Image (cartoon, rainbow, N blue to C red; front, side, top):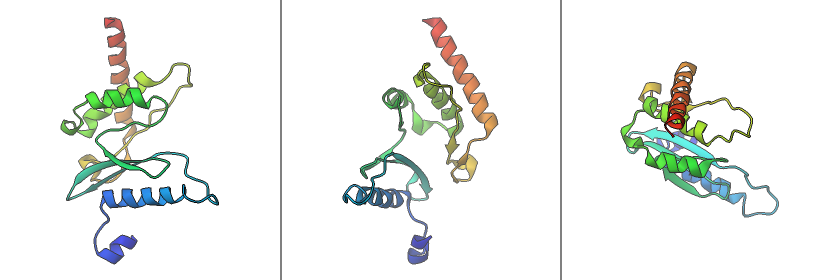
Length: 154
């Protein structure tokens, strides 16, 4: 809001990501404050650069990605994401593949999880909103069926 008032335009996603990363980095410099202990994914859209996805790490590093994963199975998930033609897919098409990746990298020893997803796309009027539950359920069913099919083929 302050940027809009001062500059007369909405803040670009890359500017917001860089400023947030700078703020996070400040917390690593002083012993009197606790650093942030988690990474953050930030997505945005503007007319100049289109859709953007940024990852801000706990030390204040900021990087732009087409697709990125965080957490326990991140390396396996990143490998699978790199194989996907993300720039050529709609959000609805990518949802099923992402659901499949999440289910594949989930360790069966860990407790069950509930898949939650949000997106920013034309279907959401370029607003960051939760994916409708019906679409998530449909994507999960297709993903589980695809995984079972792959396991049967082996």
